[in-house]
Length: 366
Image (cartoon, rainbow, N blue to C red):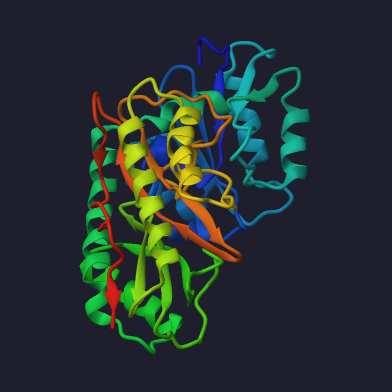
């Protein structure tokens, strides 16, 4: 913050508030109330939150908790924030940092943000996205342990799943079976589960399940973002119902080989762009007709997807402690895609697989 000339950070989204305070609650599902944490350039963070959250926040390391009776649309914490900044800024010309760039959002009404910005003048509200990205992209070993734990749970469930499925089950039943198994295995939640099955392959990887019964020759993908203690895993697995044709087998072998290339390339100092090209070369050599996902992996942690992105234009350098996904995907026929994903942490040398490596050949469901 000193290097960036920022006197205080104003944070209001769930992962940022939790990162700096440890405040973990599902109450974020309600959009009625805004929540704020101010991180001064010196001293501990200060919570400015609705009264309903005071007891939960008191369970964290934060001891300066300022509240108001929300909902109160005419003043949802703005007066408290203004008073706080007037005491925290060294001069009225100070700078308040708010994340503003890609993959950020304001979790407060725009009208309230504009009111705050106008009221704190001549202090400036500036972009602090780079500060937050730098902090959150590199995980502590405690954070890695949580991600490793949920990856292990999901790996176990993925490996035993064929024992609980059979041809003729609907996608709805398959999804319920998977979610139930995840909860029984120790996941806190399976917040994200998408995928589907189709004859000779699938064409969509983000839809909810359908009631269509599976058939011999179908290919199934399940992509899960499950949670343990506020940290996500994010990887998928592919399955075949009965036998599948050679085009499907070639596509699966191609994305598997591309993942191997990603594992070989993921070293400290390698850029995300170089990592993308290492995987994409294998996809193109394997006959890929394109990739509708737009990237071949991303950061992972307190959110299902975080910075950076494995794209041709992202020059972010990998650092020891970064947790990322390797997610090569390809269109291998008209309306048919194949996607494969693993979770890794960058180490000083070869990366550590957090998800257990998928089998080279698709498991068969009878």
